[in-house]
Image: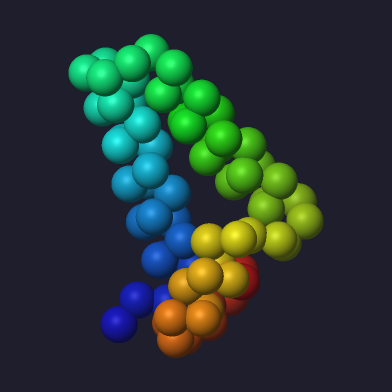
Length: 67
């Protein structure tokens, strides 16, 4: 079973790849999704606050070392 840390990293990676695909094939405005995900990753590195981690924790995924 994945830890919370790995789940958050996998989710962030999936969202970045999804936003690239949507930017290329749907609308260039989806690049803002990439900006949002990157900004959220950066702020969580400094503050420790991550909405995705809170969501995954509520799903019952066991804690890791970062979150």
